[in-house]
Image (spheres, rainbow, N blue to C red):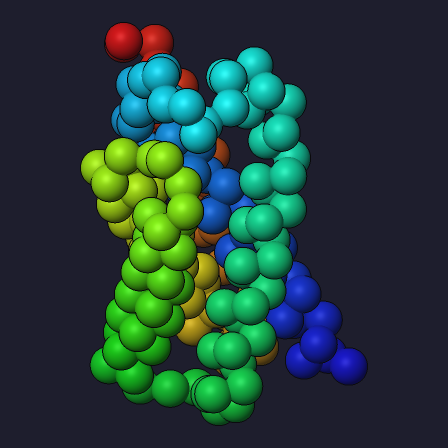
Length: 164
């Protein structure tokens, strides 16, 4: 039961960092991409209202990544195994999403590539958090660092937004 609780606690921490990374990229660094008129992308007012649906999708992806990682590595893996897992999962997910959307959506390839590159970064962060926390006895340090990372990502994102 304790292992299951640690899984869900880690999932929430990884999800929070996922949201922070997404905010930094999509709400600030890549904000201009969302301002471009693309027929297949909803108006920004609709996008803003639907942010919770995006966060739900991030939670589901975080659960998928964490579940897969912990099933493949029931005990703590070596660092290179973590890097390999992150690269394989991130590339498979990002490329499959890119090719799938490109096959039926009218979204410029540039936007799709950038969007999926951000997914790759987010997946890598989720894997890192699972690696650093799931095999530990005490999560306090990971909790502090994850919340600090989220806070810094949001603050940096807000600073970038205000510079534009």
